[in-house]
Length: 463
Ligand code: GLY
Ligand code: MN
Ligand code: MN
Image 1: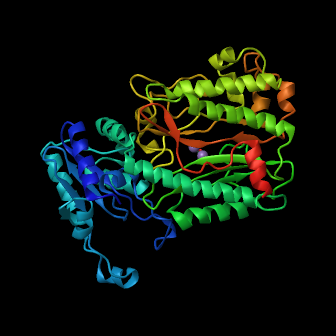
Image 2: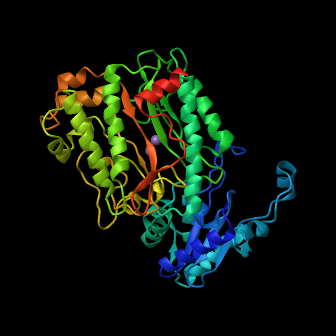
């Protein structure tokens, strides 16, 4: 974790951003996989990590906005725990690492909240995303579980987003480190890739890299020769010569900062001219974003610029027709890129997605568009120095979607469906890198970009 001063300062800033009351930040508990003592890898709640830094289950943080004090609720380990887990620090010593000197046992939490409610104090909390936290909040706040999410504090959501969306130098160093791990993962995938190998073998190998150098993967890896399926988690195919392998994978550092890269490369190490033509369009869209993104530009503009490059490229291939500006105005290119250009990234790979997109990706100034393509964009708002976002354009030939658009005569006449159908066995290409917005523009995160041009990839795979 960072020095305790970092967490003290963050909590002080949060107190200045929220007018009054109590901020209730539950950490996560272990989550059983198949029986209580066999849990999934523990993942602390990212907002709890941001304000308290403690990567242990079963803590609840309280920040009293009016007094500026923080309290941690939790319990000391019992002798029985110590028999199974070895010597453990006292809870009060753990709290000191987060700069918190007031600790109370968990059985006091309910009375503390009841007392605060009795005094008419406002209790701020974020929308829960785990059932056990929903039940805890329901019991503490005496409301039915179904009512909890909608009672979450908009004021707290906006305050937390305004802080977490601007990464400081310590956080940027962590994200650079996560990108370094992901770069190794992608290089390993390219090295292993060859006809006859099972996707699962590559997925397992790259996930072991994430575990060797950090806390594991930042999301379940996508390793698929059916890259047209956007989030394909099936790893059961045997790789075939002539196909493309799409690998979308990232890592978390030991402090849980994330990375997220996608590379798409030929199973046999050599792009066909058709694959290269589509690939270079996607790469141009990716690299153009790094040329133009800067503070004060809007991310929806970056999405549209990438979409125009994709439309122009598809016009050149005869798959679309007309003018790229007109195509993007109605979103007809979304048949081939039905997702947004990227999302924020930090302690979550889709940073703060649990807090609510209308505060994280959009704001009073920028509302989500309903135009196809833009309507799937997770962040449209104005960029600021210190933001971290992914840049992940793609072109996919999804047979079911092409068939639907053709049947329903969608696409405003901009699509040559018979030409598009020629690509129905092509698969999909996505190229994803991670970007920091700087005072003057942006920089790519990570010190070693995984091979990305067709020449770099072919050279790398040949070695
Ligand atoms: N890993 C999913 C994504 O790229 O957003
Ligand atoms: Mn990704
Ligand atoms: Mn991503």
